[in-house]
Image 1 (cartoon, rainbow, N blue to C red):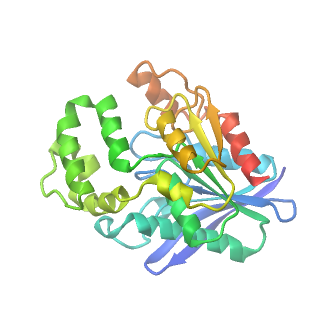
Image 2: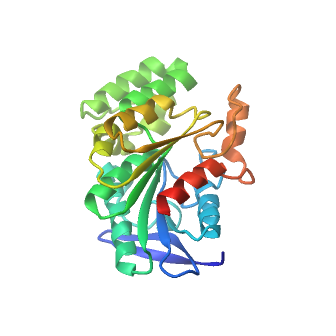
Length: 294
């Protein structure tokens, strides 16, 4: 199906956030707001930390072919939203939740869409849950979203992928979870725990995704891949336990960035699934988002 694509701007009190709106040619299509995951991730799902899978761009394209619109955006401080105001030390988790809620209200006011679905990927899953408590949407999809508090998930990820840093990171995480900044984080952990990002981490750590998921009053879907080395089935089950009406879609062999990449035997094999933009988004994930919008 033919669709139009246009850059759009969202004005906020501190600056402008830029996004891409895709609208199929049919009357009043449903639209999916794609909320990005953690780190310097842009509207297409890529970042400077080695992720070049283009997952959000590919998802938007696949949805458009089925008559579903989408809105994806550069988070504040990233890509074309780099001048959206606020230094890193001033951004809080609630700031990004407010941004996602503002996009929901923008879509609602636009009037060209019949239904607004929020699809939050990874960290964006929790942001989407909070956004839907601030603005009226019609459905929610958690794409590889955590079901346990961030301190728990981070400790697990580091123990699994970089066990040599577990003791040092556990000490920092404990301080942040208690609401205290750490003036001298270990240099080897600076990318994760630099002083300028610690206020954001403290604001994020206080949320339990399962608790927030239970608050949603819209039809919800949990999508979890079995080859995800960052978020596991434990997270998907934790979410479903608090919202038993939610649909759970388990995608065999899908990795964290929504690609079929079942080989997790080596770091090189895992990285390949994060770096290849030619690898399509797993069709089961596309199906789940499409069905939420239908």
